[in-house]
Image (cartoon, rainbow, N blue to C red; front, top):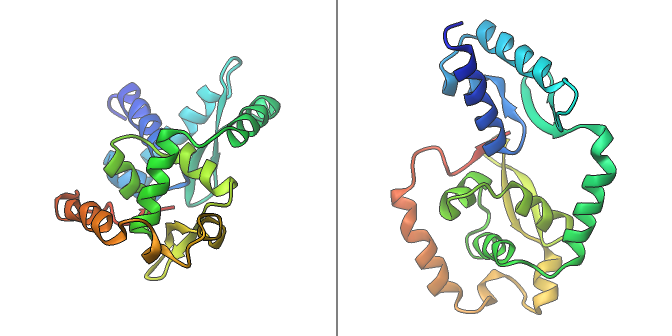
Length: 190
C-alpha cells in the first residue's frame, strides 16, 4: 500500500472524530481503499496500539471498528466520568443539549457540524445523565439519532419540546443552516 503512514494517520483521525463504531465499508470508501488494503491497515493500527505505553486499543468485528480505552485504564476513566457526571452541566454540554432539544431527533454528525467540534464525549455524558436517548433511525437501522428523554422534560417541567422557551424561534434559527450542510450529515452510520 502506498503511503502507509499517511493512511494510518487518516484512519486514526477518522476513528477519533467519528467517536462511535464506524463501518469498514464507510471507512474504505472515505480512505479510498480496497477491502484487503483496509484490513491490512486495520491490522497495522491494531498492532501499533497494542504496544506498551499506549492508552487506546481497536475494537472490531467483521463490519465495524472503533477506538476504545485499554482495560487497565478503566478505573481512571471511571473516576473521570463520575467526576464529570457529578458536576454542573458545562457550556459545551448545554450547547449540545440545546441542539438536541430544539432540533431532535438529530444525528451526532449534525451536532458536530453545527458545533464545529467532536461531540462524542458530551453526547455520552448527556446519555449517562438520562437527559437524551439514542435510537435507530427508522429509515436507516444502522444509523442513530438523538432526542431528549422524558426525564429531561420532567426536570424542566414541560410536556414536550414545543413548550421549551422560544421553541419556534430557536428551532427556525437552527434549521436555517440545514440548507448549507454538507451532504451526508443528516444521519451517522454506526
